Image (tube, rainbow, N blue to C red; front, side, top):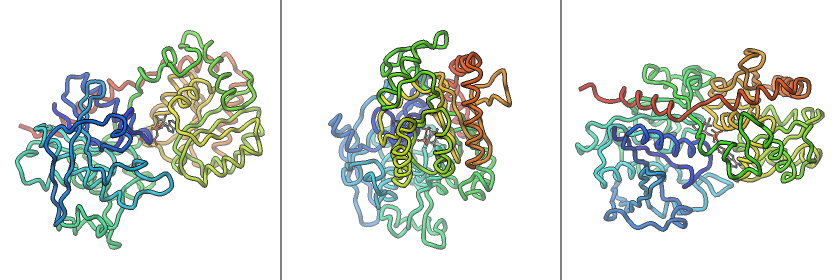
Length: 478
Ligand SMILES: Nc1ncnc2c1ncn2[C@@H]1O[C@H](COP(=O)(O)OP(=O)(O)O[C@H]2O[C@H](CO)[C@@H](O)[C@H](O)[C@H]2O)[C@@H](O)[C@H]1O
C-alpha cells in the first residue's frame, strides 16, 4: 500500500514528546512490511539549520481567499523512509515547534491548517497517490476535510485514517482568526456558539477511520469521563473507532547495547544496572547508595502526568527511605513546586528542568522504579522503556498503562509492576508504599520481577501488522 503519513514531529528531526517516537518507528515498521510509506512534516528552523536541503520541486502555491501561500518542498530520508518537509519560513522557522517556551504561538491554528493542506499538495507535486492518508493528532486533523473538498481526481481513491495520540489537545480556535480556512463556507456548520472551530472534532467527523494508540484508551474515549468532552462525537463514530497499542523501539531502547550507559546489561545479568544507578545518583547529586530505592519520573510537566495528586503528597512520600529524581520541562507552576520541595529535601529529591535524550536513557537504566501516575495516558511509551530496562513501573490503571503493566496484587506470578486505580493522592501514596515495601522485603522476588519485565515485548512489528489491517479496512471495497 501507499501511505502518506502526515505528522508535525518526528524523532531525530524534531521532537517534543511521544508523538515523535511513533512518527519514526511506525513508518519504519510499515516499510519493513513492504509498504511504500512517506512522511510529511514541517521544515522547522532546527531542521533547516541542521540540513540546509535543496528544493525538491518548483515552488508550490496554495491560494485561499485573496491570500497566496508560496512554499517549497524539501526531501530527506530517515532510515530509508522518505520525508517531505514543507518549507514556509513565516510559519515554521521559529524557536520552538508550538510555542516560544512560555506561550503557545497565537497563530498555531493557521500554521497547521496551512500545513495540512500543503502536505496534500506535496503528495500531488511528487505524484504520490496514496491509498491511505494517515493523519496524527489535532495538527493534521483538517486533512480529511481538505481531501473531501479537493476537486481534482487525485485523491479520489485515497482514504483517511485519523490517529489520536492525545485527545486533550484539540486545537480549539476562533474561526475568524484563521485566514487559511476562512474562505471555506462549508465550515459554517462546524463552528460552535462561541465562534470556535475544534480541529480534533473535524478529524473525528471527516476521517474514514479513527484509532487511538491503545485499546483501553479507545474504550475510554467512548465514555463521558474519558472522552475529553467529545463523548458524543466519539459515540457517533463508535463503529469506526479502534485501538492499536504503540510499540517500543527495542533497537533504540536496549540496555544491552545502549551507548548512553556507563555499563550495559541484559535480563540474564543485571550487574551493569548497579553501575548505571551509581552513575545516575552521582550525576544528579544524590547520595550514591545501592540500598536506597531510586524512583525516576521523566515527562512533560503537565496535569496529564498526575502532578495534581502527586505534588500534595511529595513530602509524605519523601519520609520513606527513598530517592526521587524528576526530569522534565513544561508548566512553570509544577516546576516551581518541584524546585521548592527539592530545596527542602536535597538528599532525597532532585528536579532537573531539562530535555535530554542521554539523561532519559540513563534514568531508565539507573532507577529501580519509574513513576507514571497519569491522570490519563493514551498509550505511554516511557513505561515500556522502563520495562525493557528492568525499571519497575508504578502507574495508574488508565489508558495504555492498563494495557502494558501487570500489577503484583492482581497477577503475582506474571507481575511487571504496580498499579493503582483512583486518581487521588492516597491511592498513589499507598501504591508507592506497596512498591517500596516489596523492594526492601523481597529482594529476590524484586529481581525476578525485573527480569520478567525485561522479557515482556511490545513490538512495532505487531503494531504495524495491526495498522496494515486497519488500512485495508479503510480502502474501497472493489
Ligand atoms: N525531559 C525529557 N527529556 C528527554 N526526553 C523526554 C523528556 N520528557 C519526555 N521525553 C520523551 O518523550 C517521550 C514521551 O512519550 P510518552 O508516550 O510517554 O508521552 P507523551 O505524553 O509525550 O505522548 C503522547 O503520545 C504518545 C504517542 O502515541 C502516547 O504514548 C502518550 O500516551 C501521549 O500522551 C519519550 O520518548 C520520552 O523519553
